[in-house]
Image 1 (cartoon, rainbow, N blue to C red):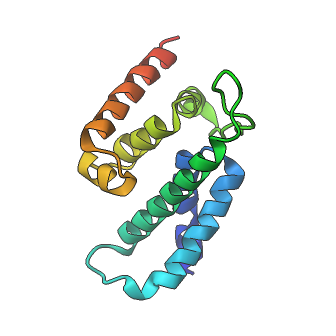
Image 2 (cartoon, rainbow, N blue to C red; image 1 turned 180 degrees about the horizontal axis):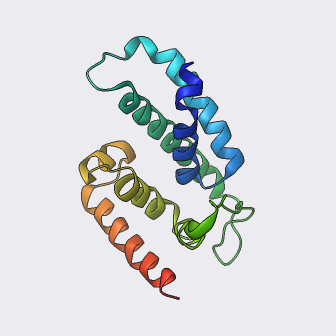
Length: 153
């Protein structure tokens, strides 16, 4: 019941942050494993969906950090990553926006999704990611500029 009720939202968040369909599926499963393990720590101070959202973000960020260190060893000569999967696009008019978001650097995309899509404040993003508040703001500013530029083409 719990899984069926929340899997769509968790998967959508994982997909926006990781931008890879198979990785999002793995992250979704990992999130529900963590939720099951930590269900006893849910104190009810906020809505369950809020707590679940926070667990999801933490799972994805931990994986992105782990993967970031691994991928440093597997980059192309010009600095492009090798083997980065195409993003899973939504149907309709969101295709251009999804492509533009997918083209952002991983940190800029993460900050953009957390701030503008999920509604986190910069101090919360800093706490979640380990970035300084000013760095979070700079990533968001740069992401918005790049998105405007890309979408105006």
